Length: 222
Ligand SMILES: [Fe+2]
Ligand SMILES: [Fe+2]
Image (cartoon, rainbow, N blue to C red):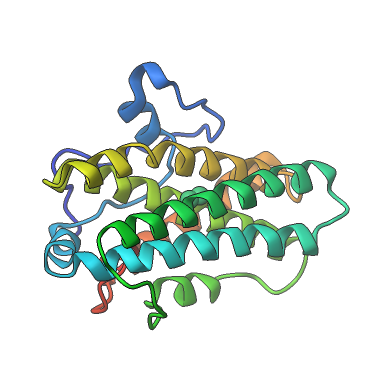
């Protein structure tokens, strides 16, 4: 079974809409994530052994996050609220992408293509085919990826000794928690609250199993 790392196990909550309160940053960020399992020590070992590769993958993740939001905006353009929120997320993820690339440059790590890990592909396979279920699933899976990123950024902040990286990840996790909540809220444009809540729990169980299985390639979501 997955074990909690350094007490950062995530607490499940029924409300995806809690605001991330900066007065208690760490706690509020982890209580709103809906994750059904926590990262194990195995991942931190991958981080220790392959930090540059994890950082390169992080840049790819930010780029993919922008692309996911853009795809959703194209496919559900009739929803004004969704278009507004996705526009904000695209901008923010591209900013993160730039920030990670600058970090790589400062460290003389060349940004290059990487073979993707298995996480995204396995999650994508869970998406139901017919609308509006498809929209609900795409949004909820995006929400869980954001939640997992948030959890792992907190772990990186706490685990890494490097001061620049600690600060870097300490400054990033809150926005990923906010994106998580936004995607859950957007799913309610396509299904009633209870249905979204139920599906989120199901997908979170699947996501936790994928994380538990792991991936031998060192990645942000391996
Ligand atoms: Fe991001
Ligand atoms: Fe994000």
